Length: 218
Image 1: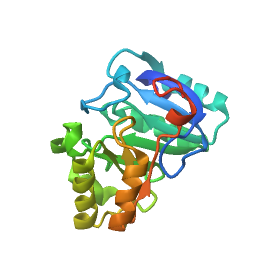
Image 2: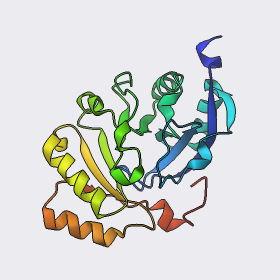
Image 3: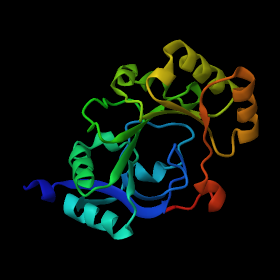
Image 4: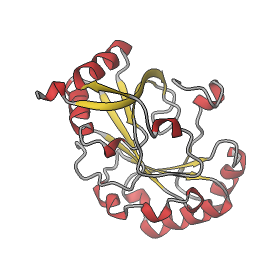
């Protein structure tokens, strides 16, 4: 099988506004891979755990290029669970795209092309997946990468705050604190960040403010 004919299991490919990360607000193509090795309590994309369709790299790239957006986010599920994701990101880079990948942090990121911007999601206690964090990944990050904490409550915040301080995360990458939609108010989280003087970015999922929170393809 030629590299172009390699297939990936894909849940959806769509064109929208980037709702998260330091690239928030930018038009973006999203490629959501099917399957995940984690089961976070608050997951908002459980529909990507199974199903989807097998698409070869040529077709995936064709659909992405049809959107005309310079930015592409490869996500899931857990995109690193499919080995072919590396070939996909290489192909997208070669077409001139800015490529990001969002990963749950339990799988090795060392093999990701250095041109790809990594968003590494460290799992907090309320997710139920804290024990799956692969801390060795931190040493693989670049200054242009980002570390995300999804916070469900005050306990998650305090845990994340101590991780930021103890591991000096700002030396590895940008740090994002994101409240679980509908569980923790952004205003409350902003207050905690300001009170503690943390050098982190408060992140709200703006796509859930623009469109109905449960809507797919946005």
